[in-house]
Length: 67
Image 1 (tube, rainbow, N blue to C red):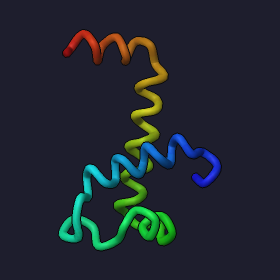
Image 2: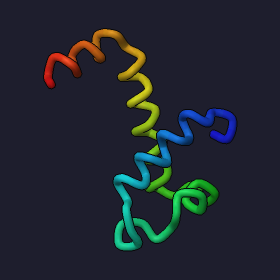
Image 3: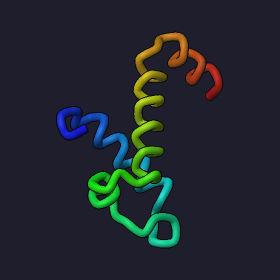
Image 4: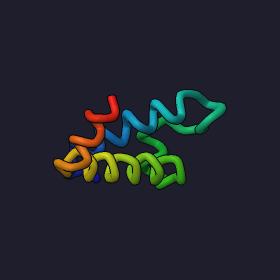
């Protein structure tokens, strides 16, 4: 993940949005990344799915049609 800075940044944003405080996740993103916590893995998975959705033209069109 260290080599894909865009994916890492996306995962960090998702992590911070989904786990905003200590009651949701006891670790900050960097620590969660280091230990490979379930919260970190979920954020990375969401970032990968988002990347795929943004890369697909049909999905982009569907997202804009719904708005």
